[in-house]
Each structure stands twice: as C-alpha cells, then as structure tokens.
Image 1 (cartoon, rainbow, N blue to C red):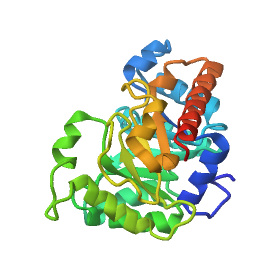
Image 2 (cartoon, rainbow, N blue to C red):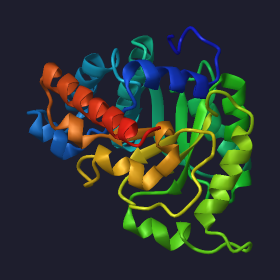
Image 3 (tube, rainbow, N blue to C red):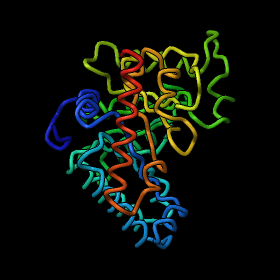
Length: 285
C-alpha cells in the first residue's frame, strides 16, 4: 500500500505500515556533528548527500521516516529544497513521512502551517506533522481539519522526553487532571470510532518510566527517546502499558550513527524494529 496511491486515512495506512514493515520511525536529523562523523561538510552539499543516502537506504523498508525540519531550514531555501526532494522520494519508495515541525499557532497562521505540510500539492506535503497544543487544543483545529481532508495524520505533543517539559505538561488543569491528560483526552475524542487506528497521535517520551496518564487514545503514540537519549525497546511496555501495540518508537542517532554505509543503516533499523516486536510480544499485546 503506497501512500501515493491510497486515499485511506493516515491511521489505517500507519497500522498497515507497522504490521508489514515493522513498528519503527527513523528520524532524519542532519546534526552538524553527524555530518562530520559521516565525513561530510556542514553545508548544503553535505546535507544533500546525508539526506539522499538515508532515504535511499531506508525508505523502501521502514514504516516511517521523520525529517526534522529545523536542520534543513538552517540552510535557508537551498536546505528546504533538499527537504522537499527527500519527502517526495521517501513517499515514492513507500515510507510514510512524518514532518517533525512542532508547529503551534492560532487562526490563519495555524491554517498556513497546515497548508504547508498537509495540503496535497504543497511542495512539503507529508503524511503527518508534529504540532504543539499549548496555545490550547482548539488552536490546532485548522491542522486537524486539513488532515482529515487530505487523509493525513497529526501528532500532538503530550509528554515529551525532555526534562523541562514536565513544567508545563505535568501541571494541573482546572479540572484537576494534568495538562497532558487533558490533551490526551482531546486526542481520544478526535479518534473516537476510528478503525483500526485513529489519525491523531500523541508524542510521549520513551524515557518517562511510568507515564502516569491514560494513553488509550485509539491513535498512534510516537515515542522519541530510543537510542541516544537512553531508552531501549524493552522499556516500552513499562511506559505505555496496554497501549504498547500502538507505539511507534522513534530512533534517530541510534540508526544514523551507522552511516554512511547503507547496509549498516539498514541493519541498525532492522535490529531496532525486531527489538520492538519482541518487546510488544513480551507484553502479550
């Protein structure tokens, strides 16, 4: 099922990709240090070589590729051109592309972000995008509505893997619940009745230990923190509990450090995917 050939909702396409390709998202994060480690210059030529190598090695076999927009934006229009090409080629090879942009704004500005990443025909049209809800969940409505129109997904920050996030996300809302739980409840409402999986996902760090929230949102759970940040696939059942079968672990440096050799990149991604399958199976999900 190619994302270019189907009109199925994102949740359906993601479930299929996870079941057939393995439950793994690989980030494309061209840090200056990674470019140097690959023997590349920290310039547009190095960025283009790094990105093309990663897409060619992985796009025909991993479920999700997640380019981090900021590492392309820092090179201006030429960097964005590299990102546009990477998105197009990754989707053509069958990977779902999750644009890690973490956009959050209100009204027409949020609508413009939605058109950038979620409108068919846009140069940066992706299968899904990450967004921040901390201007109020309702501020995401333009992105949520555009995602429905285009069959795309939206991943909403809930409990992130950075320690500073708890200052906001663990704070208590007016109803006595944590702010993260309020956001998760909104996501569950958006996904109500969707089968086999809703298209509104949550971002929940794999480094959290017991998340302490209800993660039954009938949607995907993007789990950053595997690899360089210290979490392992074996940690996933403890964090996500009964929802672990809907987790999409995100690995960036843990895979990318094995480049630029394409075979080594593939082997690292396959190893992580296998470890996630084993962790989910061990949880009896």
